[in-house]
Structure formats: C-alpha cells, structure tokens
Length: 207
Picture 1 (cartoon, one colour):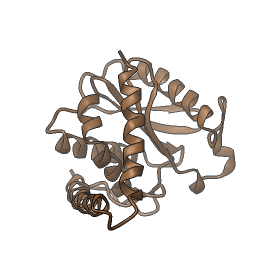
Picture 2 (tube, rainbow, N blue to C red; picture 1 turned 30 degrees about the vertical axis):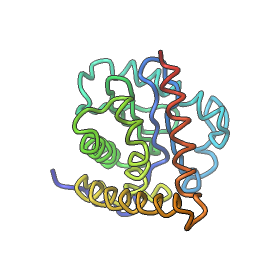
Picture 3 (cartoon, rainbow, N blue to C red; picture 1 turned 135 degrees about the vertical axis):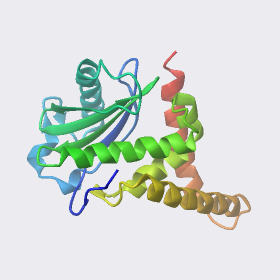
C-alpha cells in the first residue's frame, strides 16, 4: 500500500488498555504540540494522570460500542470522542487506540495504527496478546518512539519501523550488558524494568 506524506502530521496520544475492562496498560501523550483548549475534556485536563485514566476508560467504552463488529486485529475502526479523531484495533486481550485532533487526516492515523500493528505482529510472530506484549515490552516502547518524535510522525512504514526498532533493541541489550558489568550507572535498564513491572502488574490484575 502506498504511504501518504506524513509531513507536519502529528498524533496526540497512543493508548493500550485491557480489552475486558478498559484499564490502562500503557499510554503516551504529546500535549506540547496542541493548544491548551484541546487538553480539556469532560473528565478534566489531560495533563493529570487520574484524568487520563478515566478518559482512556471512556474512550474504551465508546470504542467497544462502535468497534463491536471488529473480528480481527487487522481491522480498524475510526470514531470521534470529544475533540479527537480516534482509530482503534481490538486484539484478544488488548485494545489499541491512536488519537489525533479533528484536523488530522484519518488515513494517516489509520496508517500509524497499522504500522504499530504490523510491527507488533513481527516481534510477536503473529501472536499479539498480553503475554507476548509483556515479553516484548521494551520493543513496544521502541516501536512507538520510532513512529513519532514528541508526537510528530516520522514514519508509518512497518519495514522501516521494524528495522530501526531491531537495531535499537540490539543496542539496548549491549548497553544493558555494560551496565551489568558496572561500566555505566544502569539508568537505561532501570527505566524499562520499572515500566515493565507496572505493565505486568496491570496484566496480573486482569484475572
């Protein structure tokens, strides 16, 4: 499929929630790119973590209704909530949402979520679920960082995303080995370890 130009295109956030109850698993927001009025939603102001979690639950509630006909992760649903255009994919145990403002091209947003989906499929060997996402959590974060920089979309080409994320993951493993041997302070691995523990705790609470 041909890729649209992503020049100046941006996203507001990427959200992973548990499919059964809409609880946050992982999310990343880029509020610095948007006017302050966009940050105010019925739940409150989206710079507040508790507001974000309630907002994400409500996005999941609406997504669950409009996406009821989704039968597999390769399918994408587009809907609006508050002042956002939102695209979603539903996996067995995880729902994924990409948020943009009303002015953002819906096709671009769809290609962003497809880029994430195809990249996740590659690292999980076509088995996207809570277990494989947890096992590959560091690469999930790297994939998101490769797609956009502070919300500005860099690439939506899965082959580029996969190549770059694989290279960065190899570098991270090398750095982690150096940290283990005491050659650096260990800050890099500790960040991933902390985030992964939070991710695991959310999953273990899913019953």
